[in-house]
Length: 141
Image (cartoon, rainbow, N blue to C red; front, side, top):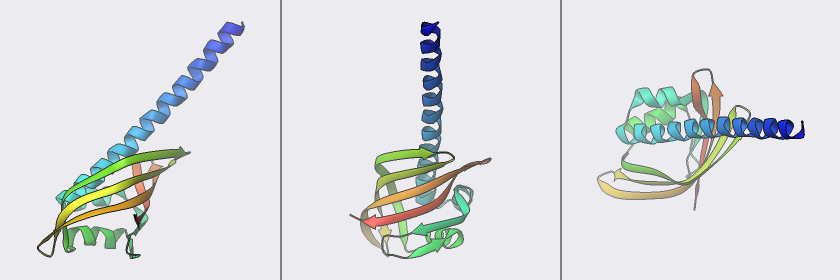
């Protein structure tokens, strides 16, 4: 009987661990999709990923809502040529995920090549339609 209970306990924790890994993978996939959309200036994908009530904080202190953040990517002076999320880490709590990483990007800003390396912390929320970015705050390293 003890062996059966031990086996059932192990299976229970394994199933929970697998579910958590699945959600982490889904959040990271959305982050990668977001980065690609920023490089490609894909307004439709940005609108899908950003939560309607999103706040987007820049390392300069500028704060955008969803519409301003999309406009900044689409019309702003910085045209990303590459964007990577390095040293990523995630914590899942209920239907929320916090993700921290180093934002490393290259782009053209007013005709000049520019490299950006900043820290970022994001809050994602899981809705029926999938993971949406609810908050992002960048900070200088």
